[in-house]
Image (cartoon, rainbow, N blue to C red; front, side):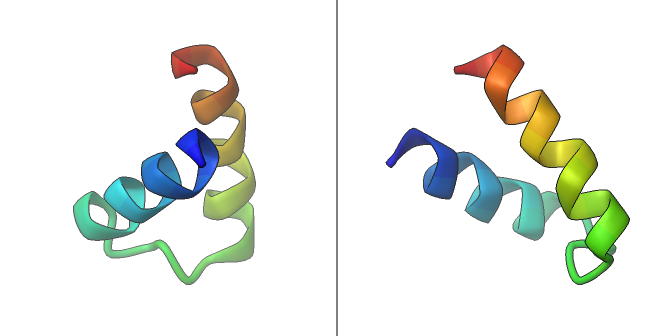
Length: 34
């Protein structure tokens, strides 16, 4: 749930949300933040 929420926030903040590599990078950030 935390992962989905963080990913959603990331998509709102980052216009490159649709970029696969960007999503992976943010997924790593989510692990650190959560």
